[in-house]
Length: 162
Image (cartoon, rainbow, N blue to C red; front, side, top):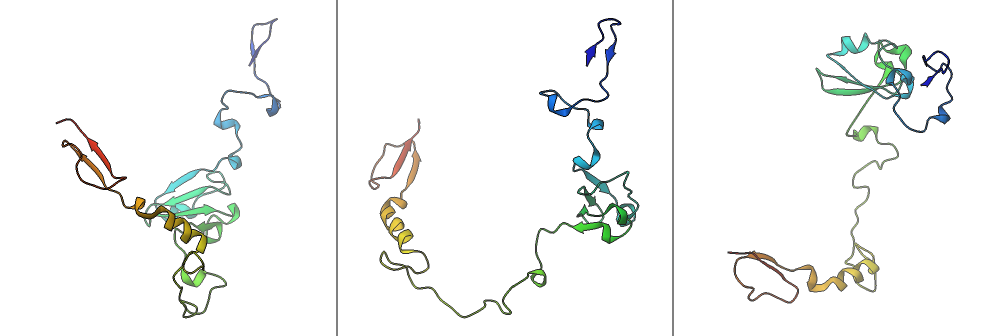
């Protein structure tokens, strides 16, 4: 805010170009509700269907506590019915999957063992990389108060004070 030098009053800009704002915080009341995705919690379907466009905007999330479900507002003109919401789903029902095979697995099939010369269950390049790891992939890690003894080249022994 700027001070009027003549009167010493703080002036509130009524028409400020947002591109000149370089830092600071905006009051949430100054941000249009449609630009903010919000989570609104309701007790049940009746309360959800009683929401209005004063309560929610398109894109807001509504959590219905009695059934522990979440909905995304898709149409603020239909908030009084299921048509106003899309149910969030963490899983997909098989019937809702499109372009799927009619049976699962689609065909009887198998995978040959991969070698460094031919691909199988993995590519021959990946098989070569895996083979290069060799015995170094199977190393022991020991934490003990004793001095190192035995083991194999590459094992890790961490001696702690007794």
